[in-house]
Image (cartoon, rainbow, N blue to C red; front, top):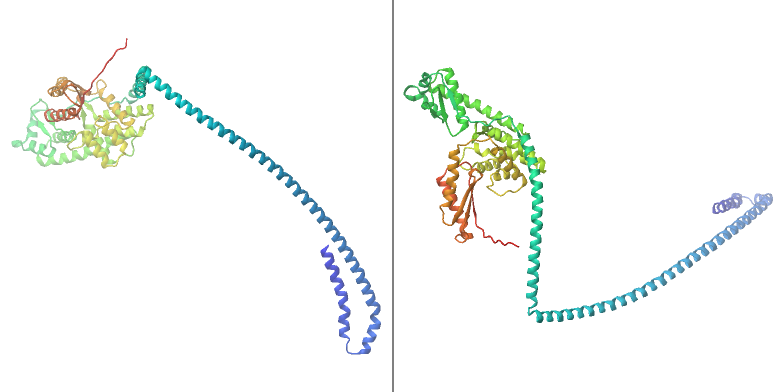
Amino acid sequence: MSNLLQGLLSTLTKKSSSPKISRSKSSTSRSKQSRSKQTNTPIVSSQVKEARETANQIINLAKEEAEKIRRQAKEDIRSIRQSLQDLSDKLKSQQDLLLHKEEELERKSQQLERQRQEINQAKDEIVKLKQQQLEKLEKIAQLSRKQAEKILLDALEKKLSQEYAQEIRAFENRFREEVDQKAKEILVDAMYHGATDYVAEYTVSTVAIKNEEIKGRIIGKDGRNIRAFEKVTGVDLDMDETPGEVRLSSFDPVRREIARVALERLIKDGRIQPTRIEEYVARAKRDIDKIIFEEGKKLCHAVGAYQVPRDLMMYLGRFKYRTSYGQNMIAHTLEETKIGMKLAEEVGADVEVVRMGCLFHDIGKVVDEEGSHVELGVKLLKKYNIDQRVIDTVAQHHEDEEFSAVESVLVYIADAISGARPGARYENYEEYVKRLKGLEDIAKRHSGVKDAYAIQAGREIRVIVDPQKISDADIVKLAHDIKTEIKETMTYPGTVTVNVIRETRATEIAK
């Protein structure tokens, strides 16, 4: 509607402005102006009439528009008033509801306060009554409260201890039955998977010769050949022990093998002299080093260990020429690692830690340094930054340290299974018995010792002392003295653990 009004006004303005412009242009002559007025009078009248009609139309339209706006405003005002009235009614009802709830809460609060006061009064009465009862009981029993509490607690503790002991014994019996059966199954399965093609070796390094003339050539003029050979190889030659062979003696199995290979090649060549001895020994050493590395690599790959440093593979390869009580170290390590891995799978332990622990557990036996093979093995593995969990299994596989994880226990068990099975190892029976008896005799010579038992093939000596003669403080010194005497007077493989036990027992029988 506003656009229509603007259009009408614009038209009216244009029509009214046209005569003014023509009048201004005709100001040169009064005669012409007079004539122009006479001529344009009808036209102006019609324009005015038309403008009036247009104005009336505009006014009528404006009135209609105004009426519409007024009616709409009244409707909006009526709607707003109704909304405000509804909102006011709603707020009033909510206010009434809140006032009602406030009054209800106030009543409940007063009721709770009264109940609280009643409870406090009841508590005070109960405390007074309890105190009166306790006083009466103390007078009747002639005991104080603390004394009565102590009697009741002691009786309850004794009763609970008996019940706990019965439950524990019943649980242990059930547990033993289940565990024994499961353990048998696991161990049998592990040993089945750990079976290898190796056979325990009972060999001595010897070289066969066809006749005594060859012995003479080996000795050489004035013994120069044999001296040169022993000097270069570090191995002693025994020419007189057995006819038809030469025995090679050395504590180092690798050195002994190098000497054996070099001597066989020298005998085959026939030209035995100091310069050729050095040449053949050097060549044999290179060949043995290659064999050692290949054997170490082969052992690692056989158990699934593919990330072993080359130097450690060289150490493991030396197992080929190393035996322990007649059991070849490669055969033992391969067998033990397979058993340990299978046990780890069965019990849900870390198979990788057990694998590497079994593989490295005896590596200290081929390290040419002073110390037990456990200490040397731990030192070597730390040098190559091996996982500390693996190092712990090596350090604990002879119980030199307490077990820190289930993987260490599994390595210990796998080692015991492989070494203790029938036919695995060989040791002179008389020497074995003599060594065990010697350990027990050393312990029994000390004052206050009741008995001593050598166990675990001489790796542990358990000493039972008289608690009336030896105190807890004295057993530490006794263990140290026994350990020192064993180290100074005996020869033994590995380590010997001295356990001194002092205990006092009290036994009662309920009838």
